[in-house]
Image (cartoon, rainbow, N blue to C red):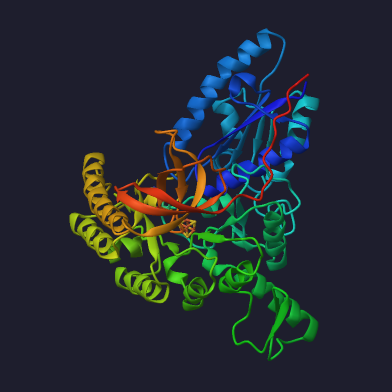
Length: 497
Ligand code: 5AD
Ligand code: SF4
């Protein structure tokens, strides 16, 4: 019988995508998916360390798996445990000190090695820790265009366009665990989009820590290559963008906006999303591409972090509240009917009442459709964790958080209520968890919609839905018409004989 695997993901979209790769690699090696730990021969925990809590969850889960592994070994079988992702990259060998029953520790730069490392462990009978310091180049396994993926939803694909981050936000562990920014070659990204579309994918999310600086490293290296070849930089630079050459451009290409435009040309891709741009780098050409390219969804995730200029400066964010709001209104003016979401941290060291009031004001003015709000947690090794600024007491942070939630929820509810009576294009995800007679899907704005279909409708279908009511978190609607049914193949389970 085939061995079974289970991948559990903690954390962000980058991690969810890495999990799809880990699943793809294991299935490529003959494993089949397990429904839960009790069925699994290998459990992979793909971890995140951006915020506190992930550690607690990881070590809690490892504690639970320890008992299971011991029972297995008493029965003469095994449960192999692999820890991957940011926490593995950060904790390395020390992870084994806290959890000696872990068999493989795999970092963020070598996801493609999962199967080999499991084999190494089996051969040696010892725990294996393999952590690389950085992505060597964009052709290595960090951008495994050749690596298989098992998509959570067959109609939706994450596509990594860049890994790492060159910024140094004082609170953030990402540069330490994901390394410097490396952009994936333009042609590879397009090829992956085309392949995904051919498999029936209709929605793609372009992933990067700072998507707006996509291409910066590519053009820098192209420049130095040209310099090496010609002794000096040519006066006009030629860069291949998609299928055509751009010549005599004052700006080196490709830019992120070139990528949005080229992605918009891929037949079959109906929706393009991306996450996240950095407010300091959000350029007019990106906003213009959002407006021009029909497939790019009218949704911008623009992390604010704080509305206080002092806190923003201490965080090294590179913008002021006023500049942020200017960018936002430019985007709203150019891209009609734009939904906006954000990330905000409360309780950054030294955040005063006045700083927090500024955050409330900016959040109210920005009138977010949705916001991810976090209580600051010190990440060892970051600048903020060593800060001398006074800590914000937990109770104060919690109280601030509930006031911020009230502001954000007010604008979410108003934005949702403004949709009542409108018709929305909904990409169907499946039956609603609360009420199985209803289907759940998302609009181009990424709003959750529940509606009753008159007849069964497969996940991945597009439907036009008239919105009949709204709450803070979702819309309720009625089906107007089915726009399209999915093109991906449905897996037909094969019963064991
Ligand atoms: N504490 C709290 N929130 C954090 N984030 C990143 N690091 C921290 C931290 N140390 C939040 C930021 C970021 C999101 C992905 O996680 O808001 O945009
Ligand atoms: Fe972290 Fe800042 Fe880079 Fe985002 S831009 S990944 S918050 S360092």
